[in-house]
Length: 341
Image (cartoon, rainbow, N blue to C red; front, side, top):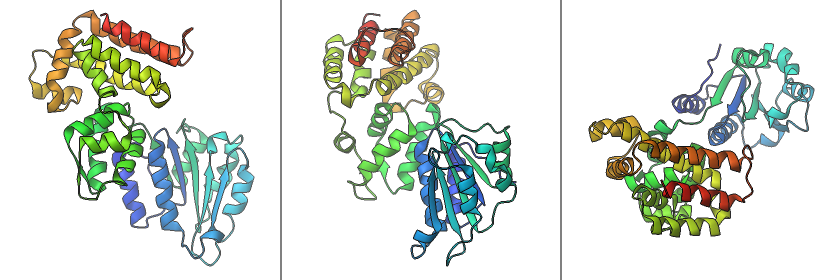
């Protein structure tokens, strides 16, 4: 029985297995980190299909348009002029009768590689379908990379791609992307396409190719809030709200929420050493002084109120809490609340 996977480390293991052509009969690729799912699917296609017979043996279907009966029918065919055929069922989360696959999964055809591509919400492992996929092949759960693990995981991704990066641009990239791994990788690919392999990625390259304004970015807003620099914070805020289409509120709120949560950790460890704080909060040495200053400026209940303001902003944006304002005004109101603490 193949084991399910649920971490970036296991993702790397699965990629290595595919590289060495260790194929399972079926793959259930599911979860929220879409970039991981895309990379795995691309790798499976690369390993299974031969270019000369690709058009005969690559079958792609979609959940809204195809029934499991159609998938089973094609999966039971033999490949043409090749050892394997690949059947991919994309948007499988929209399948209305997924349990219709159970009979096939109990006895999959060895010459068919079936990929059930199920982004977003996962199939419960205790459901019949989840158990059937686990028994017949490989289950990969693309769970979000935790905030604590994002920096080392991203750093490894950069080095595996043949690059290096300075600490400050790495931190800016993570903060600007709301610490979301898939978003970070998407932005990094832009940088890789413009920078020679073997190079050390610098701050100006992140600013240029990711499209981060040198003066007005989430990194500089965090710093202005940490230092209680009202004028600078308002200048950055005005830039964001006047260009709200290029600065999605959920991403900015996520980055600030992550930032102030780390500030809360620093505040609770004021008597600890820098090394202890860096380890507990996942903070780089280059920014420990800024976080300590933020912890002082948002002492006591102020840090709690700052986090509550960001959570309130998120709920309003999602429509869970009532709001009369648009995205820009909701975000502006939140920053003003934090500045007055």
